[in-house]
Amino acid sequence: MRFVAICLSLLLTSNLCAEAQKQNSRATPIDFSDPGGIIHQLAPDDGPPSELVIDPSDKPRTIGLLRDAKREEAGWHKQLAIYFLICLNQDYKQNRDDLLRIWRSEGDEDTMGLIIRVYSLGHSELLSTILMAERHSDGALSEELGDFFGNELKTHPNEIIAGLSQLSIEDQSQICWSAGAGDGGGMADATLAQVLRNLAKIDSKVAARCAINVRRGGRDAEVSDQ
Image (tube, rainbow, N blue to C red; front, side, top):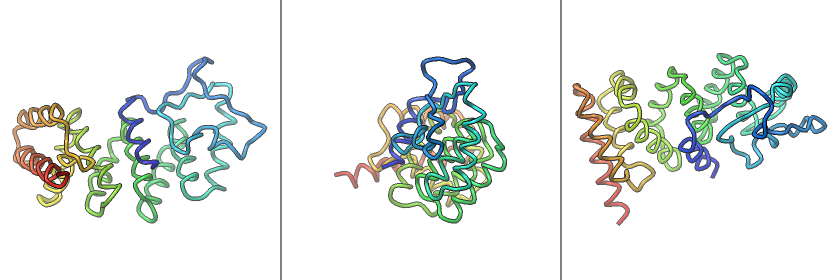
């Protein structure tokens, strides 16, 4: 599934959208004789690449084709066009809002995967949307969010706890339970240990409550996996 590829690429690189500053062998070759195929050229596996590298000389025309694709495509390819435009620093606020509108009206785990990727580029205002997505998640989306929450508690615990502090105790507990459950198999032992160490260093009731529910999520995942 596409969301699996999205999650894997998130783990493989922290620089999710890098533009080439000069022509090099990593730049994606663009065939401008096939303007309608720009999405397939940038996402040959129908999922966003771990790194988007566009030769500077190709950037203006590529942006034009992506704008056309955003206007003419539908569904997942429209979402990819929006995401690539964000990667290329084009009309961020407008494209972010367009992606959020899609999420709220017809989005699924793949849409949330793109939002998570944009958040990981440093757009911290998206955290509240990601956290609130847990309220209505199930199946593949629950697994995706669980992995994300667990990874963020390991690498950026202060940001997650600050976000959780704005939510109800019920929401806090569910999100941290989801982090502990991960994709349904629980956290790896080393990850769990690091997460609990991180939370113990944060002097707040939110962090203490989160640690309790991370443990519960892990235990419940172990039981369901037996």
